[in-house]
Image (tube, rainbow, N blue to C red; front, side, top):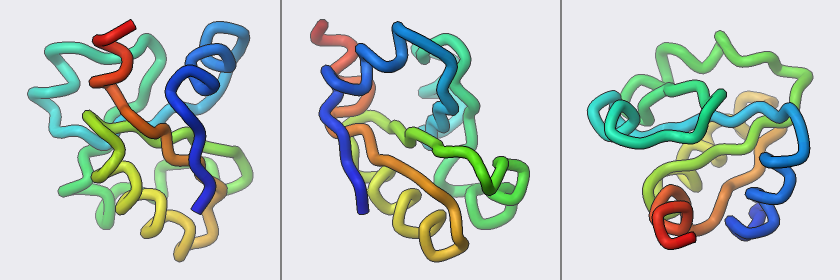
Length: 95
């Protein structure tokens, strides 16, 4: 699984359009999220992942990087191109 540090990811995020999938639960997402992020909770991913464009590269984020790693593994198994954002939203809060 490919991974990227939060700092590297955040530079890319600030510089352009990228696909960001936030796999935290809806309540967590509502409290704080990055603009443009698409919320697909890990608990619903198996039922909703097909709404993602298969040809596009997706950056996957959660609170710390654990749920997003599981989501990346699942999505890779289904043929999606994904990169796990290490540190997640906790790293964003510590900017």
